[in-house]
Structure formats: C-alpha cells, structure tokens
Length: 103
Image 1 (cartoon, one colour):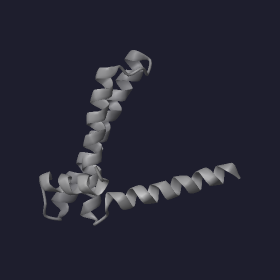
Image 2: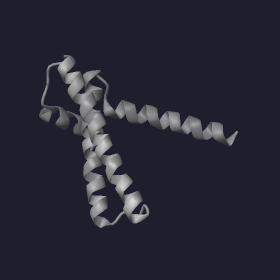
Image 3: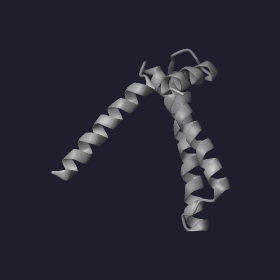
Image 4: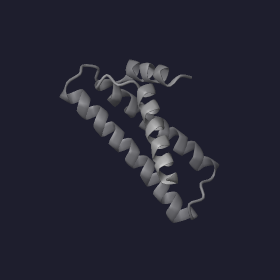
C-alpha cells in the first residue's frame, strides 16, 4: 500500500470534514490521545515485563501505531500536507543527521 492511499482512506472516515477549529481540535487531540495510549501500553510492558513485549503486546502496539498514523494522516491533510512528503522530508533530515554525526 502507498502511504498517500492510506491518507485518502483515512480522510474518507474522519468524523469532522469541514476545515474549522473543531476539525483541527479533533485531529490534534486524537493524535495526542492515541500517542498517549500507546505510551501507556509500552510503559506497562517496561514496568511489568522488563521491556519484553509478547505476541499479544505486539498486536496491540501495531493497532495503536495504526491509530497514531490515522490521526497523523488526517491532521497533515488539514494543512494540505501529504504523508509521502512528510516521509521524504523526514528521510532527508535523518540522512543529514546521520552524515553530520559521522563528521
């Protein structure tokens, strides 16, 4: 699957489609909320399992990362940003960072 196809699909299911303060709030708070749930799950893996995730944890982490990706996709679209552009820019920045560390 291409990342921009995922973004289009996410937009077809987003609750608030009008670009107003309610949509911006919903998308931003949704992203923050889902990232918080993911962080809390990983915190419990660290606390209760010494950081070793079992198969059930991996399934849950995958689901939660999908939720984070969903809200990232719809928040990016609010500002007319494509996920593929974000990914490309991030790759360029991380490559630059890596190259700077080698110097």
